[in-house]
Image (cartoon, rainbow, N blue to C red):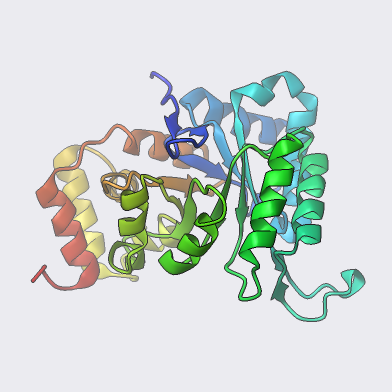
Length: 298
C-alpha cells in the first residue's frame, strides 16, 4: 500500500499527514521499548507521520515515553512531525498548583516548550497549540512569545485548541495561526454548526480533530442505535468497516479536517489510513448525518 503523503495545514503552515497518531493515553498502554517502536514504525509505514502530544498527557509523562523511541532513533526526526499543546495546569500540590487553571503567560509557554523539547528529545516542535482558551489570555503577550520561540528555532508553527471562532479570531489578529484542534465526530457535531468549520474554510486553515470516534462510542450501538445501523449499512454497501466510514465522513468535509487517532491498536492506524482512501458520496454523508441527529435536514 502506498504511503499517504503529507498535506499543508494552512497556506504558510506545516506539512502534516492527513491523519495523526495521538498519544494521550500512551502511559496506559503498557508499551515496552519494542512495542512502542512497533507502534511508531507501523504508523510511519502507513504514512501517518504526525504525532499529537500535550505537555500534561499522562500526568506529564507521555512526551518522555515517546521520547524513548526518538532518542534511540534521532535520524528519524525529519521523517515525522511533532505537535504539542500547553496551557493547562491541573491541581498538583508539589508544583504549587492548588486549583486547575490555565496559564498562557510568556513564562509558562516558554517553560512548557523547553520541557517538551527535553522530554521528546528534539530541538524543535513542528506545531505548538494553546490547549484551552484562557480567559486571562493576553493576545499581545502570546503573540510576542510565539515570535520569540520561532526566532529561537524551537517552534516552527502555532495554533490553538478548543477555541471558539471569536477566540481564534482574536489571537489570529496578532499572530499567524495554522489550526484549531477541536472535538468532532458523528456524536459531536457542534463544529459543523457553531461556525468553527465555517471559519476554518473561510481562512483556509484546516482543523485538527480530537476524539473523532468519540472514544469508540461512535461504534457502540447503545450510544446511538440509528447511527450504528446507518454505519453498518453504509459500510456494507462500500465494502468497508464502520470505523473507516465514520472517519471518512469527517474527512469528507470541505474544511479538510485532520483527525487524530489515539489508540494502541495497530488496526486503528490501519482504519485511519483506509479512511483517507474511501470516497463517500453525498447521499451516504447525509444519511449518516440524519442518523446522528435523529432527523432529516430541513
